[in-house]
Length: 153
Ligand SMILES: C[S@@+](CC[C@H](N)C(=O)[O-])C[C@H]1O[C@@H](n2cnc3c(N)ncnc32)[C@H](O)[C@@H]1O
Image (cartoon, rainbow, N blue to C red; front, side, top):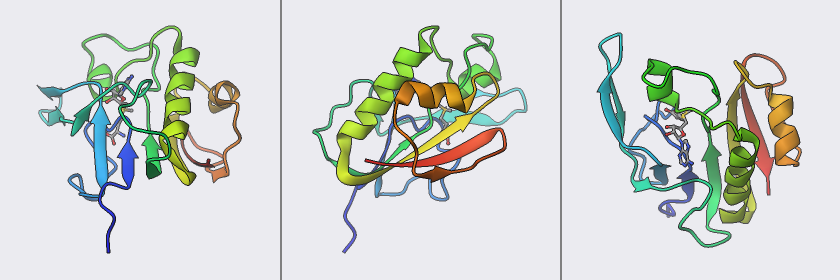
């Protein structure tokens, strides 16, 4: 039997990396709702199931088997730019922002749960982010600009 909603995506954006963008096992959350046309004419739709702040999630401790955390990775992007529309922008106090998000992801994970973390090194090195998290990943990409990492609680 399939356990419904065992995965939480803490900041799903337009769900680009999903094979099924309406997977009933996933709660798609984000702090924005947005429908706009990008410069290439495509529609960008951010329509989360749950509107929430990943720094303060409305779930009890130990709720999910998997949490997906792909936060904004840019500190510099024009406010109205397509990059900002698509990925959002980090505030200047990004270390505290990401640390709070990471800690919340860990809190809502079950005790043996997995956190899937994605990062793009365009503007901030992964090593800087990992210093902030203060927890070693289990495994992940060791090179390339876009990194996928797995943490175990
Ligand atoms: C890199 S994008 C996610 C892209 C997504 N993984 C996809 O496949 O399309 C980062 C997302 O984090 C969201 N975000 C930023 N701050 C947030 C917060 N405090 N709480 C929840 N979502 C947040 C942004 O709105 C943006 O949609």
